[in-house]
Image (cartoon, rainbow, N blue to C red; front, side, top):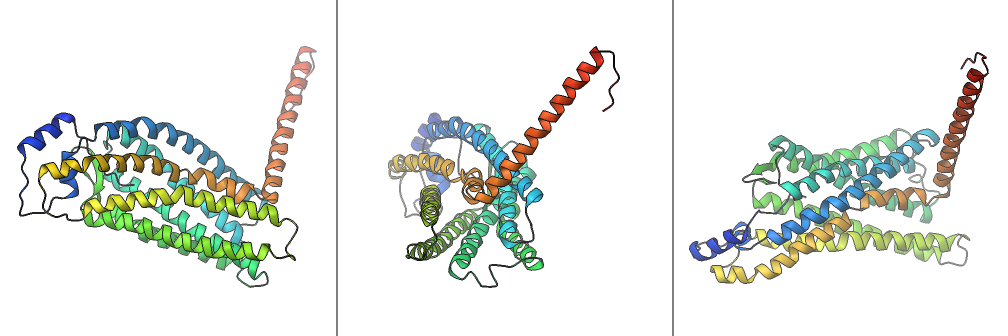
Amino acid sequence: MLSWRKMVTTEDFATTASTNTPDYSDYYSYDYEDELCNKTNVIQFGANLTPVIFTIVVILSLFGNILVIVILARYENLKSLTNAFIFNLAVSDLFFTTGLPFWAYYDMYGWTLGDLMCKLVNFIFCVGFYSSGILLILMTAHRYAAVMYPLSGVVSITGCYSVLTCVAVWVVSLLVASPAFIFAEVQNPNLCVYVDSYWSLWGIYQQNILFIVSSCVFVTCYSRIICRLLRPTAQRRKNKTLKLIFMLMAVFFVGWAPYNVVIFLQSMRFWAKPPADSKTVAANCGSSEQLDYAFYISRLVAFMHCCLNPVFYVFVGVKFRSHLKKMLKGYSDSSSRRSRQSRHTITSITSGEEFSM
């Protein structure tokens, strides 16, 4: 999320490699390696691809998540825990989505929006990122309880307990995301980054931990749900439910596993390395470049989750599809009435009669 990128040209690489000899008494750092490597092609790749994909994701996310919020507000009881989770997940995805245009701009032009915006955009983006992950964990656990222990009090939580649960999610997300606001800053020439490598590592490993916890909850809960559904006494719609579960699992791991592996490998650059000369560092540039390409691609795939969540967690349900049809039908009927009234008005005017709306 906070960018690693550095604007380095071929001339910079040649000059650095030939004139700047490292001090062998020190360890070379991630920044020094990045200065030796020519990142021009990688940066151009991100600048060309990211805006196109993120534009599509933003449009779909805004449409899907706002639609979810409208349907819930019009047709559902927001005091129930299930609906509260879905509502807050949509809000969380909208927070996450607001950061994507800024990252697309960043990849194209670097950070030119000032220090405060650097802190604010990162903070809002991280709040959406972590709240979405926490909510998906809780929704999975709640679904597990509903299938395995349908008479449990956890399944039927409503009212203030539902509100308190969601408030707790947002409080935790705000606290976890706070380092992004405190320690992010603009550094020359146009980078929005953490103040030092410690907080960069902190941000990466937080994401890795969230992914590991989410994976454990997903695998544990959904595997046990699958075992329950495979019993002969299971409901008739078990095949459809099983397909949905496998789809959820596939989308989650295909989307998030490569991204978390890549950022973990990138975190190795922030650790101190043994003494090496410029030739040794330059030899690592090939693998470094491949990893940077992988970062751009895996990030694009992972960040699509904000527009996929409404599809997999809301509109696959019969009830929500029914609400959507009802809303569209109501909109269609309203448009038809306005059209008929418009035609009536025109007819009345042309026939010399008065017509009162």
